[in-house]
Length: 360
Image (cartoon, rainbow, N blue to C red; front, side):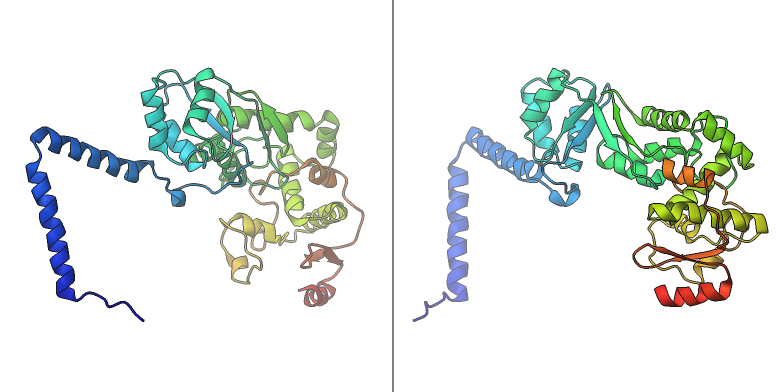
């Protein structure tokens, strides 16, 4: 048996009755009582609006992820809270500010880098910041990362501001062999050595750029520099060619063969026709490049321009650099990768086309 629903008029009458009762109670209150009620309503609204989390504005990270917070001298609790909320360390920046305000912590937070994790309570975070429990910073940059990839990775870990890092990388050239070259976007592209770094607690974009380029400079031995000279390669050309090898070769055995193919093409005046140089022009990689992509008018388009691109297209690891210094001895002029990343080689264009049909 179904319950009978009230008629529309009955509902309106009930609502009017509730409204009349509320108005009568409000009018019966004195001015002080009315002020108290309004204060409670305002505080409740502030709580609902500011203190409840806004997950859509925060990065989603696993609970055991490590998040670094870089507190600069003079940062306010509001600025710190905004970063903490953005990286998912806390749920509410305003709750963080309120806890700091009520406990008198606003002018007691110490500068430095702090190792945190998602899901912390404001009081827990503030305890670390006030006590100055800074942490050494550890991060890993894989081989083949571009400057843009590095900036994004470091920003996700809370170590730098992404745009600030990119801006500094445009002009950063601490060694003569890096220099500034026409048509390049980031001066230090190719020279931020992929490695695992552990730095002190007081770091910023400048310090990271300095450490990564210094790492590259130390790893490039005098013997390797001599070998590059014997191949009539400047250090800049060595790294540029190694960056192409890094991006083209997924497997170790392919690196010296691909390096040899590039050397042969350069000697013959053939375009390198490396898809990786076209991918460098894109914000996001494209699985299969089209004929139209190969017509892009850019010095980085090695289908349209002969010789090396204007500069490195990634930051190569030592294995790719060694492959350029010690290329294989082959007669290959063409190669194509299958869907698993294995490269197949040919000595002539007809055979190359046949292999492309098989693997693609």
